[in-house]
Image 1 (cartoon, rainbow, N blue to C red):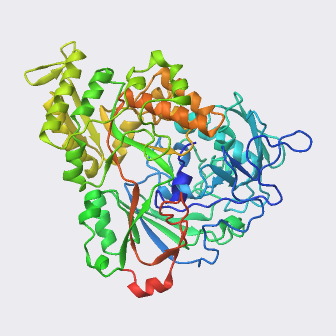
Image 2: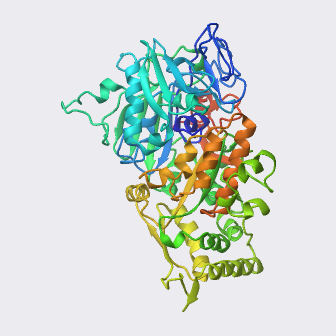
Image 3: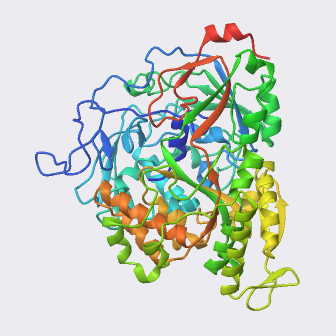
Length: 631
């Protein structure tokens, strides 16, 4: 299962608000497998869970983690980095720069609870049904679901959405590649047919489909021009969620307003959420400038990704006076890989020994000390921070899975636990550089006049492409180490638009990329590492991996029959990815850092909510009066 934007918004991983789920009354709570109605047909279910029990039965009053008496009102001003020139989510990641707020005006068929690993409850859909072999799923829409113009959300909207998103978006094309047909089977029923049985995640991920209004996109704008869903636009789109776009300044700000007659406002699962009357997104191209705006009380909270700034930049009077509070929220809902991507589409990176040598050249420990105040840990897994991360040597079911691809993976997978080289002192650094040099020599590379050349005599050069000062200083730290092994290295800083365009077309040597991993990985792994995605512009396979063993292990994950099998297959994939040295792993931090003007309150946060900002928070007038009016 992918870490969808809806999930990130719900857990507070990004500063945005999204609606939660609504439930169907009168349908018993059942686990997804082996549910049959009395006549042998699949039973209608109010919730879907991949492998575990469903916590909330039908007819429950509210989620345990919300405050049912949370006051409505107030304004929350939120910092976003970068810029935007697009409100059309269908081409998100393909054309233009999407405004974060544009992702918040749509609802999905289902949505996750924040105190369960992988359970979805009905939102636009009141219930779902699928057979035991997972060969199809039917979703039944709520009769009361409405767009902001008052028109009902229909089965035609759902069919239009999946067909359009698959056509326009490489991500959705990959994510829903196994959905072969979407058809209307009743006034409110949509059946999705899959190309093969046994993929237990497919009914689940179809529930993540954002539903778009067909009548809006097939209509005309205020100037009488026919809308084009294949193009970027700054026309305010029509949505169905608790918030809509009120106004904006292109590239600089977007204001969302709470929909007063939102169709789902009285649903039990909405109690305690969608509390702010307004959400204002202020865009800054530089995080240093953004911090200065926050200090001047031009924004209410800021997510801080810089360890240096977190350690040194929050010493202004409002912090001392406790009008601004610093908080760290544990990240328990996902794992991640972040690293220097070595683009395999470049011939010079095709030899794994060269890629491994780059890892030996990276002195993380010294960088952590100099740049990050020793706040970070080195990443040693593609599923870092979760139970899915491999460790030690493979055994049990994981070993059985790996045996099937034994002749296609590095032998170290079976003989040596993966570890990153450790630097931090001159002796260790020299030893690591010697090992890097040995690997390069073994691969046929040699240093001539202090320049590394490949077996054909061509000089090894690379450009590290970055888009912001934080990434630039990490690249600048790595550059001298690469040059010590003879690699001619340059760093190029480009603006957001150029950076996105170059990433989409894979026009780079080295970049830093991040892959967020859910606690239940599945079909999105093909988009991340699968051979088919390697040549799809805009895909998340920025590395360019085309490896039959990786493809086979991804299938093992997707077709896992239980949680134990999923964990074993994921660990096996992790181990193979690591031993191919596709990236130079960077670092991670187990907390989300936020600074806030103390005008807000929240209930006790559930396990998988991170900060819960802003969906589980509300404007606290007493606190606001205590610290004074906004600037």
